[in-house]
Amino acid sequence: MQRRQFTSGIVIVPGLALASPLAWAFDLSETDAAAGVRAALEKGAASAVSLLGRNDGFLGNPKVRIPLPGALEDAAKLMRKMGQGKRIDELVTAMNRAAEAAVPEARPLLVNAVKSMSVEDARKVISGGDDSVTQFFAGKTRTPLAEKFLPIVTKATEKVSLAAKYNAVAGKATSLGLVKKEDANVQQYVTAKALDGLFLMIGEEEKKIRQNPAAAGSAILKKVFGSLK
Image 1: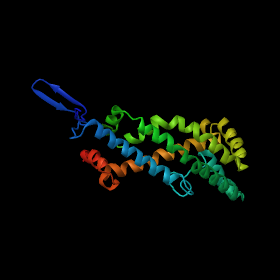
Image 2: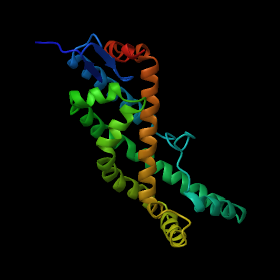
Image 3: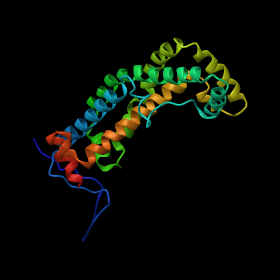
Image 4: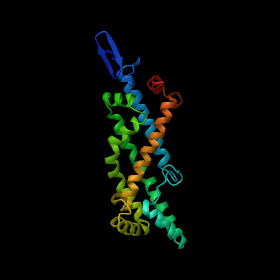
């Protein structure tokens, strides 16, 4: 089988060869390069899901902890002064627990996205920026993941009576222009924040792999992403 070099961005002019800043030439076949990218994606996704899809995965991580949105966060400060702090804490905890419950459901969709990755997709990831893996996942899976997360989040938040109160208060705040329309429904808000947190953590894992592919424990990752050093 013929092995084609995995290159990007080369422009040939008679008597002159110009390479764009994104132009690389690896001693790799396209199959090897694509395999390396798939390995990176699968590893990053698995790590992110494991970190978030557990108790305190969201609630205990300040990077992804889901707060009340905008004006409601300010209103919560007043409610705490009025002795309603426990209820606010219960709602925030429930929101984050709902996200933690939903995230494990992301694994099959993320894995399927990896398996269906084309060589052209792999090219874009290798020649893209530091968040190209994360952007690949977001582009391929955000919409179907939102559909999958929403009923799980809804079930979790229905266990807390404050969810209805949240929606009522947020709906009023939205009519006054204090809260974004998409944040007026607690289930939709938590679903969106859960996805934001998931892609943020995938991005964190991607940075680790790019910075030190050898530490990722995969020869093919070292071969592909080590070539970018």
